[in-house]
Length: 433
Image 1 (cartoon, rainbow, N blue to C red):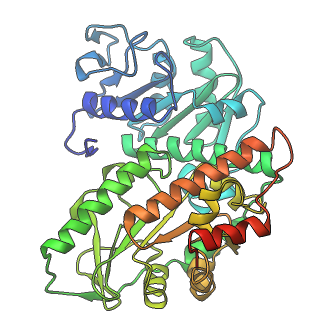
Image 2: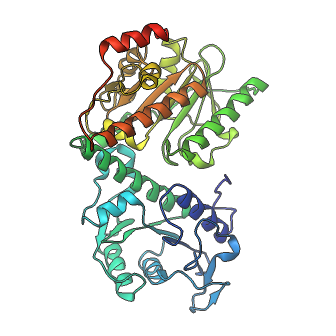
Image 3: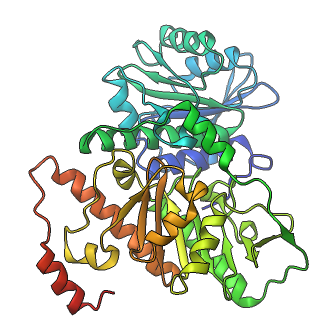
C-alpha cells in the first residue's frame, strides 16, 4: 500500500489511493461514491461518473477548472454540484468524500445520526454531525440542502444525507478520510452494541477527563542504535499493522502494536501516523522506560511497559478496535468465548476493565492479563497479548470472529455455550494454563 503523503502526491494520485482504500474496505461499491480535492489554483479534481471504482487510475481523475471547463477523458461525477457548493461554503476545506458505507446508510435511511460519544476519539475526530434532507442525486437542490447544513453550523465537517449516505470535508484528504473511516466505524459500533443490548455512551466530561489523563511528556534517551534484530521487529510490526487494516481489525486513526525486544525493552507504534501508512522508521524504541529521542510513542505506552514488566511470558501486545468486539466493549454485554473449542483455547474467559483504566489504573489491566490473554476496555478498545506477534494477531482474529459469530447468533436463538466440564476437558487436552 502506497504511503499517502499529501505534501508530495498529485491530487489525482491522492484520489486514486483513497478511493481504492474505500472500495477495498467495503465502504463503497463499483459505481457508488465520489471524492474530490480542491487545489491551490482553485481547480477541483474529482472522480469520474460511471467508472469502476475498483480499477480507477490517475488518468481517469477529472479536473474541473474555476470557469467550469473540464479536463480529462470522462465526465465528472454527477455529484459535482454539491462538492462545488461545499467548497464555496468552506474555503479552508480542500478535500471531500461522499460514499454509501453500509452502517452510515443504515442511519441515513432511519433518519438518525450516530452518537460519536461511543468512544473518545470518534467525537474528537468526527465532531458534530449534520443531517441533510433528501433530494435527487446530482441535482442543484441537493447541493443547496447539503451546503445549507454546512453553512448552518460551521463546526459541521460531516453530514448524513437522508436516504443516501454521507458527505465529509477536511483540511486535506487524509483529514477527510480519517473522519469518514472513523464515523463509519462509530456507526458500526453503535449498531453492534444495539444488537447486543443498549449502548453505553460517554459523557463529554468523561471524554475531556480521558484526554487530560493521556501522557504528554516522556523521558528520552540519546545514542539510539538499530541492530539487525531490532530492525526486523520494526518490519514485522509494519506488516502486521497493515494486515490488521486489510482485515478490518484496525482503522487508520487507532491501533497500537508493540513487541518485546530485549529484557523489558520494546518497540511500539506512534500516535498521529495513519495506520495504513506506517513505515519502519515511524516505530518507537522504548528502553528502560525511556523513548528514543525525537519520537512520540503510543499514548498507551505506560500500559505496555507495565504488562511486559509484570508478565515475562508476554512478548507482544495489540490494542485496537475491531467493530464486533467493540459492540461488546460499548454495550456491557458479556463476551462469552465458549463458542467453539478454538475460541476458548486461544482466549480463555475474557474480562472487561472499566473505561479509562488503561491510563488511570494500569495495574488492574495488568493483573487481569496475568490470567487471561485478552481484556476488553469499556468504551475504548481490546488489548490482546501473546508470546509472539503472530500469536497475538491470531488471538485478535479469533476474538473478532467469535464476537461476530455471537452477534449473528443473537438473531437466530439463545447461545448454547461449551459447558464447564467441556472446558476442563479442553484445558487438559490442550494443556491450557
